[in-house]
Length: 431
Image 1 (cartoon, rainbow, N blue to C red):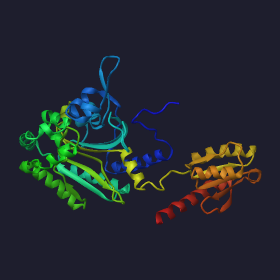
Image 2 (image 1 turned 90 degrees about the horizontal axis):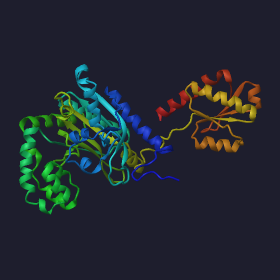
Image 3 (image 1 turned 45 degrees about the vertical axis):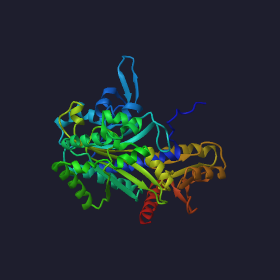
Image 4 (image 1 turned 30 degrees about the horizontal axis):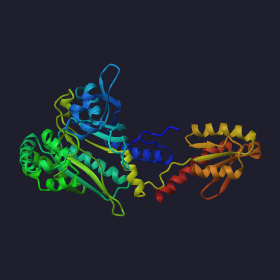
């Protein structure tokens, strides 16, 4: 027997239902805001991520799955999807052929060689959006609000939106000088990652999770003290829009996110459960100013946001936010005898063509065993067919919740089911 590789996992049965539910909600929200789906390759040229994600990030330095292919080209399993998504826009010349902004959503597996933990895997599913081609606080706010709403639709009510701005280029140049001077006093006593970040990208130090270093970081100069007038005005505009629609937030001056392409507003959604457990960040994103140009496109800006599906599902399961969403069958068909089995086999196909999910027992089972099968499949109704039903050109339909059963002519079957399921849906909505 072969086990899955460390850091990977099988998504099957109920867990697959949970993932599908989360993905469906997120997709529906994106489509309602006129985002279009993008599907890009899992493998890309390694240079794509070196140029976009940044060679000072932990992702590039420690976590990428990189190999040489048979043509001696350096290939990487994508660690995130933004770079490939923007590359696809550039390759397809969408910035010449489409009205701005180009709005994309995506879903697919990513790969990072990191320490596996609950809800975090080396292969994980990421859902996200990119809105490219418009430099506007309205677009930043739109993405933030869109996913704030989506998370609430999934049941995350005790959300905390953490937000910061990395400012414009002038802001970052002046701020990096101040950080260089401040951290220069302490860098010898800080962790090895911080020492490396001090040389390559000093802003990354703000993202350090080492407790002793966090104390030093807490007393560092604040980015907000270095904002240019223009970047302060932009950030204030985003915050004002969030205020106007009632999205609560907390300004976090140490929030920088883990990717080098962010240049403006950055944000994360944090969650505390009903029992008071703080789960930290569920996902996040930010504004980027140079990414499109870095990847060969025009000098356009964008904003994006992404979530790990495993992370969302793990937290939702812990906090009982997935109860009752398991997919069940509409109908379980029970043949009584060999002749009925063939009739039920044909009936199953007919019901599928009419949009009803169903399964049929094609093995020799008694009544009790078939009802157990229906229960395990969470079927709403059972359809029973025996010699008498075949003779009378009818079926017996049993509501498995109320235990009421009715004889229905085959010619009236679809009409009867449409009424039953229509009433069921209506009652569910009223509840």
